[in-house]
Image (cartoon, rainbow, N blue to C red; front, top):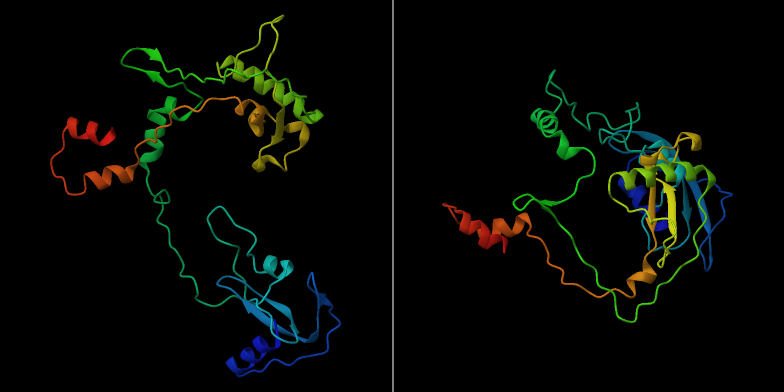
Length: 264
């Protein structure tokens, strides 16, 4: 903090902080900062507290108070838990800042019917499926058109780490089996080749390399070169919930015709 912020802090509390000599050296990208002194104080948030050292610089800086990484870790402000809390409370936190939430036995799930619905329609929530025209019993196909002057480009493949090659091979075989990709027949030339980028998914970044499985990696293709030769197709934005709410906000009777008009 700067000396003006320090003076404002002095005027705010009855227990005045005392500046002590400091050996800290600070500087920006363009100039050095003159350190006036330092003091220690307890810094708190709603759950935790810790004793931190504050360095006061001479003059005025156009910046709020800066907190270093170690202090943020001690305050548990860089760690998020599954339940949304920062960390466990300690004795330096602000007392009675967060009311205790009492849970009723058997009522932890806000909607117990979700598990029943996902179990009943398990085929919808598991695996990879294709969009089908149920009425005509046909598959949906889309066509991509390339410019007439498109020239096939075979780019140099990027190297894949050795520990990712085995899960990548299993993942490719699985995608071919599930009809996501098509295997190029042996002896048929491959005209378009784009580099493949493979890396573990963020949630599995700490997993042992030998324990990586196909679902733990992410493989993406760099299609910037082929995209330069693609013709632009008509893109229609799907109807959102807000569109229905706007059109039916003052309606009381609905029919199939009204729903079709709102969709189109």
